Length: 318
Image (cartoon, rainbow, N blue to C red; front, top):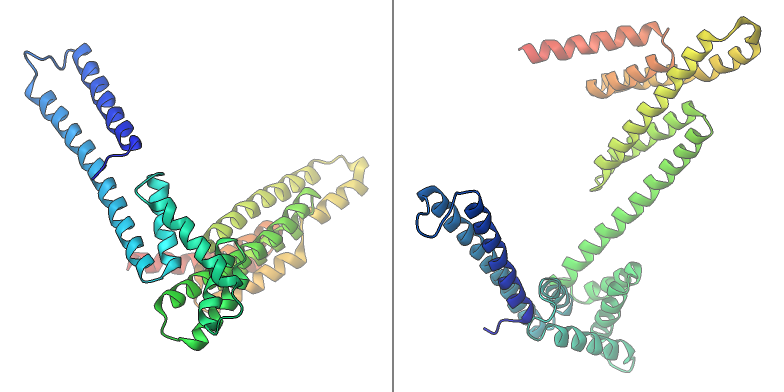
């Protein structure tokens, strides 16, 4: 198998790294040609072995991917072939005939997509879907693949990409929805409407929990972090209200109103009761804690949280 310039460069780079390492050992007194210690010799050999093994594994992986892409190309599974060749190209820019096959597939697809005279509806739909998919028009690719599935329900390649793209579109829509809620909450936070911001981020958490999206956990984590920041601001406002001078009663009343939200506290208390009844004790505790932080004088929330925490403690000791 021919070695490309890039491979030669990597081999040279590897030799340089090993040489530098040996030089370091030598300068430190850990290695010398005439009297190399057993430990340093073993370490040196192990480093060389690992480096060669990693280089071999990479070469083997690229070669296997290339051969699989060639097989898909010969079967006219151009979607799989394209992804395979692209993966190879990412690892080895000029590996064998990768660029040729990618270019050839694209030309074939463009030609087939424009050929409206053909009676092979499936072939035309495949080409249109291919071009739409790699141009980022996922909805159009889905539309064309649905046509193919109607004609050939057992086409494994189309079923694979149809499912993959549907999931990707779903993830994109979910992230867009979460981003809109997050942006709205952030605007409320900037305007110092902390209670409304907390409410928006709580809705984001509930929406993310209902969805089986890959990024659900990330959005939930972000929302909880932002809620903590908002509640810290509420706490500061509450402390400012307590320290306010009596001559500023009007200002104090305004700050206290913003810092203590009885209505929101009651709402989260009731939501906690629902979670508790459903056996979601951890969620119930979080909601009751939120209720208390919005209204420190909420006696029911305090008692409910204490009861739930006691239940968890008893369960852990069993």
